[in-house]
Image (cartoon, rainbow, N blue to C red; front, side):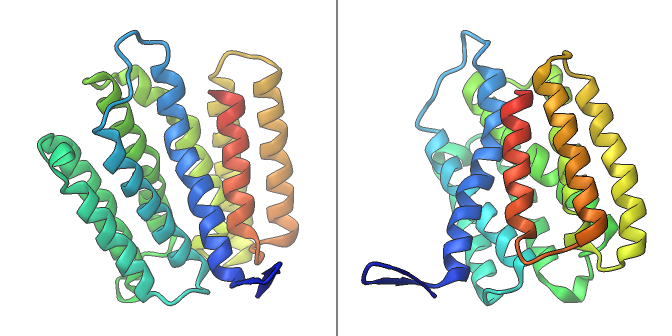
Length: 239
């Protein structure tokens, strides 16, 4: 428990709130930043349910991977995400509806241990879902179309998920070290695809520092917070 004055907060639920907010910012940042360069980009009421969907999905991710909150709450979060996906504003865009439901469905699969998807295959699918579900929906609702150039711009985000969440999907530390090395190189290469600047160089330095921490520490109690903090830093630097 954490005491703030007379208020007592459960450490796990406080962590859930912090992670959910930061992860939601990560999910929206690339689309909002890229969309600012288009005159057609505008915030609309259609994005309000998407904010709720993003928060629910982010909360579900934390509960699934942290293992310190009752898994029943994960199902509640996933159910809430589905409810937001079916709001009239989003549901009338059938492609977006299917996209968002795919994200919810995959997290449900991850949440059920019987499916055994917390492995390297699950990591790759998780990374794809998290990189393209919400950002694509945000961009589409802002601009009323989807740009292949924007999808290409999401490559560093995808690589960061695959790299950072290796310890969350496997406890085989020796194999993880090799996988982290490979995925770390991929992340650095995707960063090099961005215009060279002090921001990209700092992003590369952060990726290398995280790789060293993974080699020596592996998965820690604060692993998820480190992930979302690093991702947010990378998004601010690269977009």
